[in-house]
Amino acid sequence: MRRLIGAIACGLLFALLMPPAAGADSPQRGDGSIVAWGQNSDGQCDVPEPTDFVVVAGGREHSLGLKADGSIVSWGDNYFGQCNVPAPNTDFVAVAGGRFHSLGLKSDGSIVAWGYNGDGQCDVPEPNTDFVTIAASAGHNLGMKADSSIVAWGGNWYGECDVPVPNTDFVAVAAGAGHSLGLKADGSIAAWGDNIVGQCNVPAPNTDFVTVTTGGYHNLAYKADGSIVTWGSNYHGQCDVPPPNPDFVAVAGGGNHSLGLKADGSIVAWGWNDVGQCDVPAP
Image 1 (cartoon, rainbow, N blue to C red):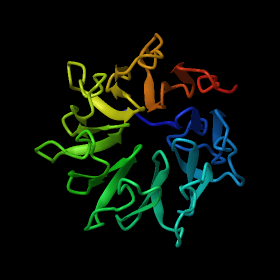
Image 2: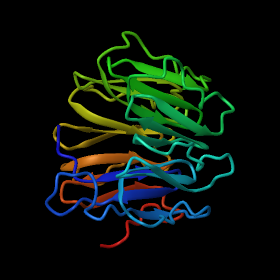
Image 3: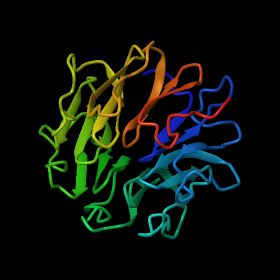
């Protein structure tokens, strides 16, 4: 596994970055600050003070930041209460943002969900225990258990919640607009759900992947050699990784744009840039 030296996240038309500390292995900056750019129609790029964040996530038009003390701060669109973190706001270890809902993973392995629940995306299946990672999308969620199985819930219009068998040996999950991805321990990716633009057609050779993420209708994964592989919708060039394509350590997908974090701490952005979501702020 390549060393993660920073953390990036995308919303629909905006991006969030937690720069690394110089010379550090930690995925957060020394001061825990977040840099945000792109569409700011609902204040989703107005990061609250103080800055002691350790994890960041983006929804459609809202943002979430996990603090060092285990609390979650959320800002941006709150029409459906997706920014109203339920009490007690403590002991969180991970966050995820969906279209109009949010998820938080607690240190005891339980998941808390809040916001829009029109498709049951906030109804975490029982037993709500032993989760180790989470992913959220428009209307469905994925949670991976300690036994490496995946639990899916919410809207299942395209089979995005029908985890393929064998439901074992997963190490990471990602949720797209109507499809889902699971990274296996052997470095292969399983994909299921909506495949209208080929978002479930993992390019061959389906080996040596170390992480996976999704945008709306496109996916990104990087290989053990630091290169990024993309597939699915490419209407806005969101799958056209700019050369040179080595030395990436993290990836993130927005609605129609993509981000890649390089080993030197710089970000490469490509795809739709109508509101500046690909204009990474200097320095």
